[in-house]
Image: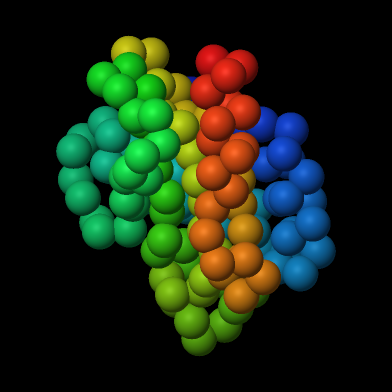
Length: 123
């Protein structure tokens, strides 16, 4: 099964801001796509790095997840406990992942619930 990826404009802005601090972020995101997202959704292999966001408007066709175990090479020595968090929506029927938010945990503690609500309005 082929997974399709898209990103919101807000995610793109977050990503550009963070890539200045963490130059390996682009490559790291590709690794996360392959070894976490695709294994979790396509092959049903749970590597305990992806968590469903409760109370986010999940239903059988659209679900929201947070990636907590994100290895960032620019943060040497921290491995998957880098503090980078990625929020995404998974469209079950069409196997599409849409990235909503990326942030560094020391800058911000939790996901932006308003962004998820805005995404639901547009959906």
